Length: 468
Image 1 (cartoon, rainbow, N blue to C red):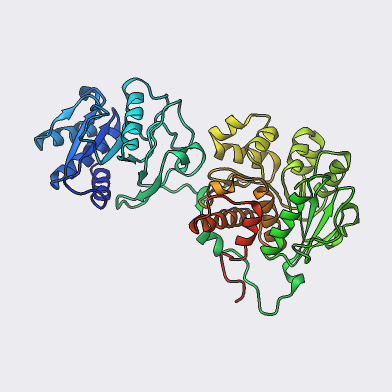
Image 2 (spheres, rainbow, N blue to C red):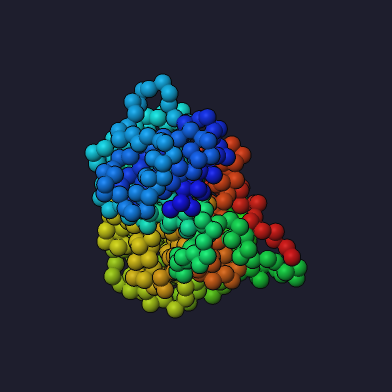
């Protein structure tokens, strides 16, 4: 606890002058003890600090009581109520040490009031640092516990990063996440849950040999594009070419489909019935597929194909409605990658989107095990899960991706990586990270809004050089 307090005090010292006030809100558990320890360290170094103890001091844990004694031995006062929110001497920083880990019930009473108090202080120019996890957020799932949760500008996670800081509703509460290992040895590591970023993805992007040719990098066949939805299939196909597939064919279900893509004439276009199935290295099925009888027929055929495949959008909806198609999926001989958004995931699990977002990691794992497939559960903090229980949280991406067609781009990107020989686990993780990194690059250049086609252009700048 003292190390945690020292780490928090050092973090603040780099950002807050010694004469600027830091108010620590300390709750009844060890998170409150960490806040007390931070205040002791800051005061011991001559910094301005105050402690608001929103707990019975006689019921604190032994370690937290030790920090309270330290605070009093420094000649410091303990405040037992929140200061006036409109007082002129506002704090520069507020430290949230109300609950942190282990919270299982919604915040109420003085603790819910503290959340509103923090919001008012931030609206007036103050900043908030959450210790380990913003109070009111589930550290394992990223879900909000009840109606009240602290919105922080930064979260200092100690010992190890908590998965709930990286996915789901938590992303609107954690601010910038920092990790301090407290200089401990033998840190806990979850062997089946990891984080994945653009740098890790770049190390797995296929490097082209100087003697390679288009056949070396596989052929992806995109099956979709029913009437009124041709654009979805084209977005997936264009992304696949940008991502390095040697050839991309599009099989449209539309009654009247184009014979050439004027924006990317390199694509080979035909009706779905005219696709030479034997030429495919991988498949991407579902982008604009529709739910017609022909769509079911094409999906059934793809499920029986012994090529790795990505199933997206309408393909997932059809599988969710058909026990026969679901069985075919779970019995495929080749690898399958599913790319649902929360509502599609809910249909596949017979649930609802709110339940999916309550525990996104569990939902992705349930889908992967249930359908014997690799799953990319899209959304804030995309989760990739494997049938054997492995899961990875994608660290790239931002709200620019919240626009029509970006999911089609992702499906095509993963399909292209499968065509180039990546295993499904790696293709899913690299695809998700690359997809998000493109949006991050656009945001870094000041783009406030984008279309899926903008994302295609960003794919011109790969994560890793394309030649040895």
